[in-house]
Image 1 (cartoon, one colour):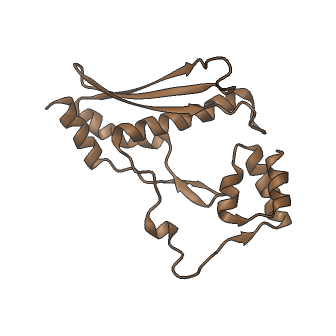
Image 2 (spheres, one colour; image 1 turned 120 degrees about the vertical axis):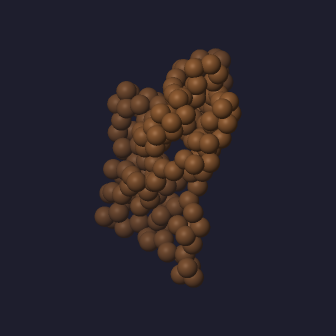
Image 3 (cartoon, rainbow, N blue to C red; image 1 turned 90 degrees about the vertical axis):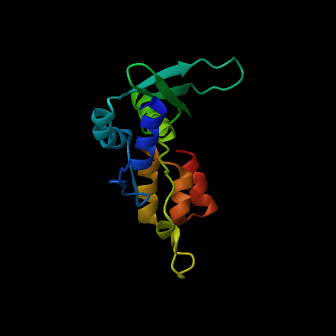
Length: 180
């Protein structure tokens, strides 16, 4: 069996549930570790291995202030290899995180998407998750209590966009959140 045939088998048979829950955004997701765990039966059966590498890309002066990680997931069969990459920026100004956490978050994100690119993992939500079942707009207003939760969420690496997808946010609240 060629490496292309082995990869095709993994791509068509691979299953990994979104078993982790983001309590602020109220959604399930899968991590790079979840993806790797789900590939283990294929690795043994097909006699292949997966390696993930990362490279900190040097930006040209004046082009971008943020460091960028290139994460590459590679499937090996002892003779041949097939790779897929993901490029992610490192937010060095992320509030509420120490610098190692900022790089770690970018690294985890990059690995997950490099693996997703290699194994053709569709990371979009299914239609049931986005269907309002005729209820129209179900967003809650951002109250004082949920605003405090939102501030903590931002300080721990969350985004204002994620908050706005769940809550109706006033211009004043958005301005406050953007200053964190």
